[in-house]
Image (tube, rainbow, N blue to C red; front, side):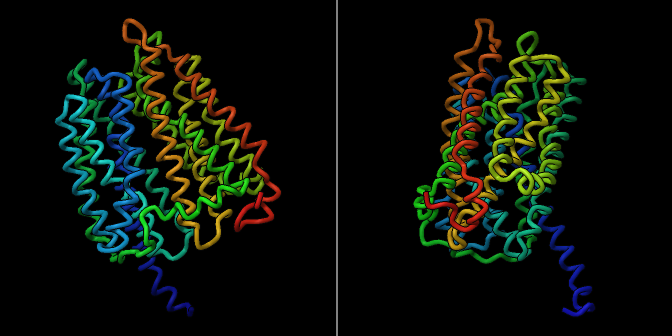
Length: 423
């Protein structure tokens, strides 16, 4: 390409980069607006531990059901950016409906239907990005704006709650996260109508095409990765569902932070995630995939272990940063490993299998387990024995890290980046 041609295209590429980055930013704000605070809202409404877990379980159900929606509609009949817009328009209405609910059944159904229409957009925003950038190496610099969006909306919510805490102490406004999520979804829907055209993918004849890669599980490395990833995600709802409750429960049982400060503390994990993303490739090159993955898993039991101590305050807040290490070195590294161990024609399906095993089945089991454990260790006066609650995910993640370290064959992984091993 001649220099004048390159210089003429650079502004267009820059504009496209900014448009796709904004899409990732808005997508993340719509989801993080409610997901980060709804546990505290349900606690304020007097929901039981299992009821809180069952509402979170709808997100796992959405992950399982959404391939049907994507497979039969988005991949065949509607341009991707328009399908995302439709989903977010529906999501805005469902979030508004959820905001008005005060009973378990009403809120459960609203969040359930929201999960069904939202989770297809997680994959489709990636589809839109890959279709237009044509270079997967640039994806990370666009996707990171999703993390920035999560931080932005959580800081906004923290400031919003702080203003209400000063104006009307003792009056809960945690449920307003659902209203803010509805507004964010509406903005995202309108923005998607301005995105460049992305035609339907026609990528698969069957919605659950990832079932085609089940044969890869017979490969030792691939099977170990999927099995250990499933086990670890069973433990993760103890973080996603219960952290804010732990941070805001009164002393001497919880940390005793007001909701605004607790919300702000949780964003340390996203800030650490940005830094950890910069270290991911150097870690894989120097430590290898096995020890990078083990390090990511171990970040979770270390974090939960610190929570069992319960003090001092600065340590409980600082422990949030371990989420960034765990997420990046576990989830992101896992996606890289699946990409390298899968034949080129099955890579998308292999990634879908990983998501199904983790965000789908693994999280579904984890939501039920965390709800049962949270309820079991509820004390007579409504507080919780957090030191016992957080021992459960430690007992899951530590053996998972040991199993991966012993069973994953790094030498064979390095020798074969296409199919992995045959063993």
